[in-house]
Image 1: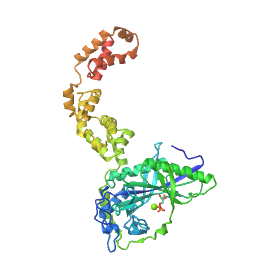
Image 2 (image 1 turned 90 degrees about the vertical axis):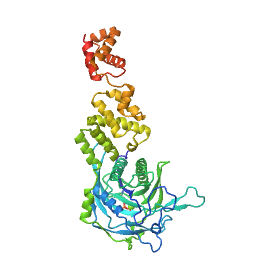
Image 3 (image 1 turned 180 degrees about the horizontal axis):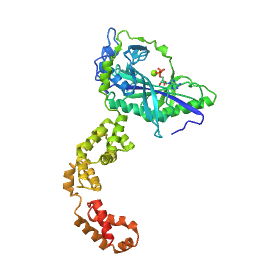
Length: 483
Ligand code: ADP
Ligand code: MG
């Protein structure tokens, strides 16, 4: 990762467009499902045909308020939709319905975790409701482009951060946290490839200690965490180079090219008043009463930070495990179900879920919701570890077999004869056999070569096909070797 040169500082503010997962569009009854045949999901309202009247989708409002409350923001008692005018082929109305002076959500914040573990607060200036535009389609056309208006009218919130971010790494930490929260809340599917969560990065540079911010550029629609990081790093470096060579930065919109890792100028940036904003006369102001806001506050799910703290406290997990296991709501629910159903130690359950299961899922490119082993099934195996039917070592084999769909833990233990040997006489017999077959090592061990103990453990384990109870084996081996 590139470092910012000594004496320079970057200033970064992010605008995130987050698609709300409502059933229908923000001002019409058309579906918003992704990937439909072009222009099959655009009603006359979405197209802005003359005489059509938009009707506000209350679920979009609820989701915007839900977001605001989750980032400690204020909810406007009265917010207003405005027309933002610009010409674009995928915007047949000639304006986008957005919010301008009175956004529904304002003055919130997000606490991000820095690489050194410290926490930093990033201000959220506002989050306003707006409709998405359509899409120009170039693929499959020659000397022309197609227009697909399925996306027109899809509800978005645009989340605007304060210029509080100072490095590409902080920007990524902020975005990841924001992404996690909207997905936790169930207000956005978070699919970055499909554009459900996309970021415009505003970047400027200045000399450390300079009283004012430098001129910013805005790199549009970057749709992966990695690309955001690269685009910002590229911009910081480019701007510093321009200034050090005696040039100035122009305020402009830029595009990131993932193939080259570079940004290039797209157009110089319009000032806000070029959009000729005015309140949309077709839409009433949105009024959120205190009762309405309180009802939404009361139904908020537990958020990642709170869940993580609870996992540390209630389950005695390390910060690292708690963070991993709360990374998604589904994973956290899976883990809690395993703990509840197995009755095994929470830490043991955490190891199996966070290390073995996630490792296996990673290899299969599956997420927790697609796990071939259900929480109940994994709990069934943990029960057998807890009651000492199988050792942790044998459990690895059982786990593999479960992954391969060979049945429940109990089925597999029975079918493979994996039951742990706790019968001490059987273990002693195996130990005595190993001692008898290795007189030289026994003599060496007894004369002080303690390290050989591991050799005997290995041999005796092997003699029992790995089935000896490890605690009993260790204890009995010590006794027998003592002579
Ligand atoms: P616009 O509509 O022109 O994009 P917004 O107010 O919607 O303006 O967003 C501006 C974004 O740019 C915010 O995220 C803000 O924090 C950020 N920003 C403003 N000034 C600077 C600057 N000098 N350097 C970097 N980012 C900035
Ligand atoms: Mg903007």
